[in-house]
Amino acid sequence: MTTQRLFFALELPTALQQTLVQWRADNFPSEAGKPVAAANLHLTLAFLGEVSAATSQTLQQLAARIQQPGFTLDLDDAGHWPRPGVVWLGCQRAPRGLLQLASLLRAQAARHGCAQGTQPFHPHVTLLRHATSPVALPPRGFHWQLQVTHFSLFASTYAQGRTRYKRLARWPLSPHPGD
Ligand SMILES: NC(=O)c1ccc[n+]([C@@H]2O[C@H](COP(=O)([O-])OP(=O)(O)OC[C@H]3O[C@@H](n4cnc5c(N)ncnc54)[C@H](OP(=O)(O)O)[C@@H]3O)[C@@H](O)[C@H]2O)c1
Image (cartoon, rainbow, N blue to C red):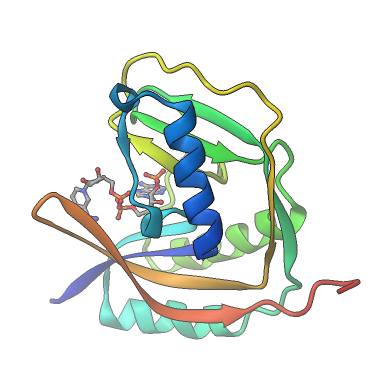
């Protein structure tokens, strides 16, 4: 059976990806970890793992039915998880819309055989991998804001030491109240 490694995620605008790459270079020494490529910077909503074409289709049909307003995301927090070796960017207060969207996608995934694990959802953008030694984090005060208007499904492939993400589908959120 052919499968694909899939995940639902929020894309970051190209300009923000570039800004974050520069900020990362300015704030972390090269030995801190392996930088994630600019184009791969994203925020995962639900990781599906290896999924059959039939399951992928079902989850895409369910995703297309989601009706939820967009929301504003403030990236103003950073952290280090030494066990998986991840340095991340996140939010001090996750918007309710983000938590609702992730919760729905994760529940739909779980109902269709994509185990969601026991760890609570912690929204983050992975900046560095293989960061298993202590890392000095930049002091708080950084802040990037984005309007989230869509969410997407990506396929993840790994070849010759490189991870690539291909967007398979993208769905709009309804206009943000007040926009
Ligand atoms: N892509 C592949 O097929 C593949 C295969 C073998 C090895 N690897 C290696 O695995 C490392 C990670 O690759 P990647 O993150 O770029 O691609 P990935 O493992 O396919 O992950 C894609 C996204 O899903 C998230 N994710 C992965 N497993 C998860 C889980 N069990 N629970 C919740 N979220 C999960 C990741 O979160 P985080 O950002 O928090 O990790 C990432 O945001 C890389 O160092 C790569 O060398 C990748």
